[in-house]
Image (cartoon, rainbow, N blue to C red; front, side, top):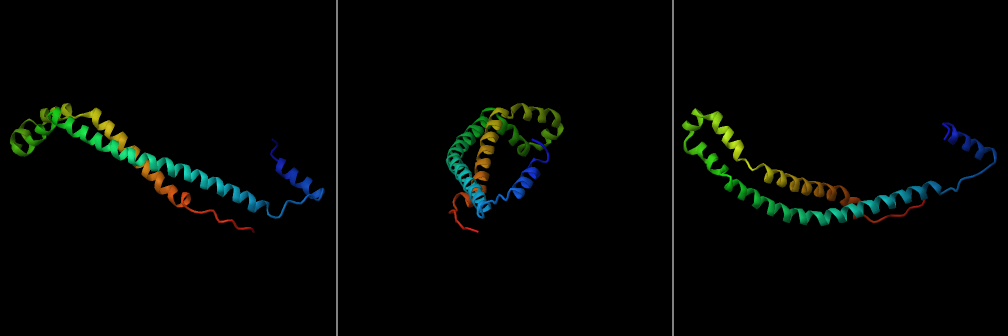
Length: 141
C-alpha cells in the first residue's frame, strides 16, 4: 500500500461528493466496545475457573512442600541454629552447604509455578471484572 493511499482516497471522495454515513463513527466505536466486552467476559470466565483449581492445587502443593521439607531433614538442620548456635557459627560454611543440599528445590519450583498461576488468574479476574460484568449502553451520537 502506498504511503499516500489514505490521502488519495480522501481526495477521491471529496471530488466525487461521496458522503460517509453520519453515524459511521458511532457504529464503529460501538462494535469495538462490544468486542472488548466479549473479550473481557471470556477472560473473566477463564480466570473464574482457574482460581478455584489453583487454590486447590496450591493447597496440595503446599502439603507436598512441607512434607518434602521434613523428609529432607531440612527442618532438623534449621532447628540446629536455635538449639546450638555455637556449633553453627564454628562450622558455618559446612552448615550452609548442608542446608543447600537439604533444600527441596523441585517441590519449591512446583509451588512457585502453582502460586504464579494463581496470581495470574487473580490479576486477570480483577482487570476484566469491571468491563466483563458491565452492561453495554447503546448511545447514538
